[in-house]
Length: 170
Image (cartoon, rainbow, N blue to C red; front, side, top):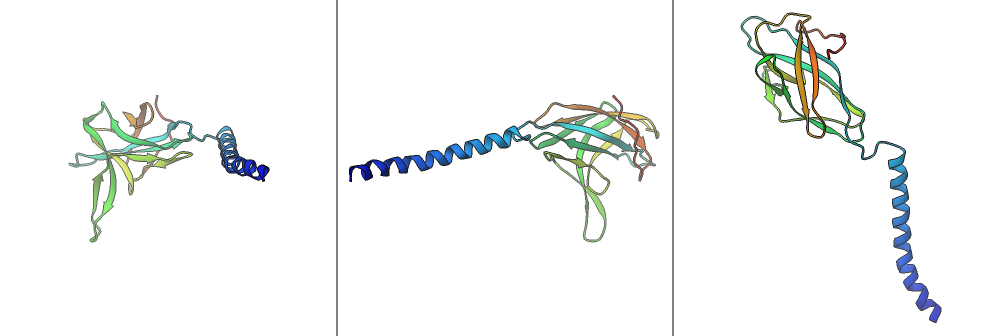
């Protein structure tokens, strides 16, 4: 009878302690074998901006972002010394009658282990050029992120409807 009194408290304490130890070992192994909990690591692999035409004062810039870090990040803003007004993150939207318009967005997620590809019918950066941009010229941008340091990139000016595979400028 005395041994059963001693065994019951040991079992009551031992089972939760063992469960915690196993969980901790599993989490440690998971973290050691991957990027779990590592900070975001965002890079820009493509950057281009459409040439504006006619009397339209605005155009759009597009960036392909990769994140090989273990945490998602958020693109929270874009700056450029080459624009007449601050660039704005926006999303392409359609009305029920088929008309297109842009909707400003505060930020855009760049998922961990993935990326974000901006496109004319999705997320883009609305810009108002200083002067006239010609195809082949480069435009400077600084992309700001919630969890990482800013990235400076140069986007190549292209005719609307085309992209570029030119290497990124410094």
